[in-house]
Length: 321
Image (cartoon, rainbow, N blue to C red):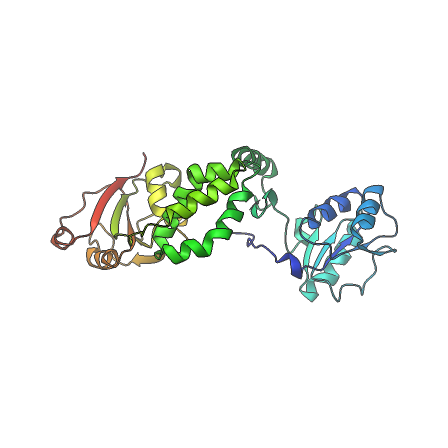
């Protein structure tokens, strides 16, 4: 990745915007979604910037860019129409380890602003690393259409009942399954329709019964050509619930990105075409873990008496062609 994705704690932001025109206004409006701790440095303000400064009581340094005003700043945006001024902002800010964004000059940025879909508290940020803004806009439009405007209500609901569910549903995998079924099902639909009381009653009723701990299993996935785009929906879902992932050097490493990020990874020195590490996978599954074993190509899985004698469930999936 050319850029490291990160979300900043809004309560810790102390921002400076250099410039008072329409570009500065757009940057200020974006910052105002998270903080009002914003200083504007510009001799003159456009009507839109002046309104933002007055309405939100922002600090205004009533002069054009001057050095020496960044001592208490940790994020600065240069939004003037003077490339030399913008470069000077960058040259002052970077030695101070201040996050710096120079509008339309990515070579003078230590961070770039992603495309944002706001379903607060759910925030989706996307970037093409500056390489394909049109493609990024197209992707944003697709995701915008997929997400209801009230999608953030699902996150608020989850937060409200997180501790209750954690107390009743002990296993991490069971909790993942519980929340997915809850948010995808009638309870989630009730939340989106604004029927919060009904949703809360249904959830409380659903966690009264004791939920059994998860049973371990091993899912062998034959990856064929290894193309991530050919990953079937079933294989993708299995990988999203993985506790452990086995793979060797013949498996396309890009597929690992589709596994649950917190899953333990077990790269194998010996290719599966020579030896499948059944024993380790069985041991983990017997502890209740969901094990994904990625296999390059599509070869017949060798007979293993230990797997047959164990009580571990196993299945094979074949990636899409």
